[in-house]
Amino acid sequence: MLFIFLIFIFIKQISTSNEKLKNIQTKSTNVDISQPKFAINNETKKIYITAEEGNFLNKNEILLRENVRFKSNDFSIETENVIFDRNEQTAHSKTKSLFKSENTEISSDGFDIHEKGNKIIFYGNAYIILK
Image (cartoon, rainbow, N blue to C red; front, side, top):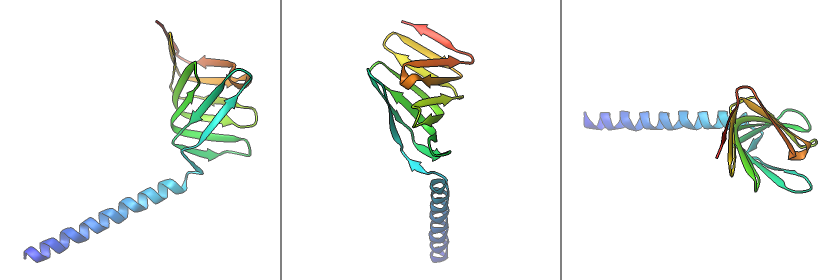
């Protein structure tokens, strides 16, 4: 009886492991880029962009998802979804975003980055904390 019980647990463990593997494979096949890294370059600074996943929308636009972070020497922006245009070096997000710099925090419903990072527009319900 104990032997049958052990066989049952072993078979159950194998089927659970196979199901987890199928879920991981299904999730990863929907992603064009794993852990993408890009940069926006202008005359005075670089803004580094990282995310967990990316999908090509067309030749120039990439949808970045999950833990998207823009980081420069002056600030960082964190959000969950961004459309990044590699050719124009612009970014657009309609998800909750958090901007942090040395003396300022801005929480907003989204943002646009234009002019190669020289101009950032926050929109929606935005809260500014000055330190």
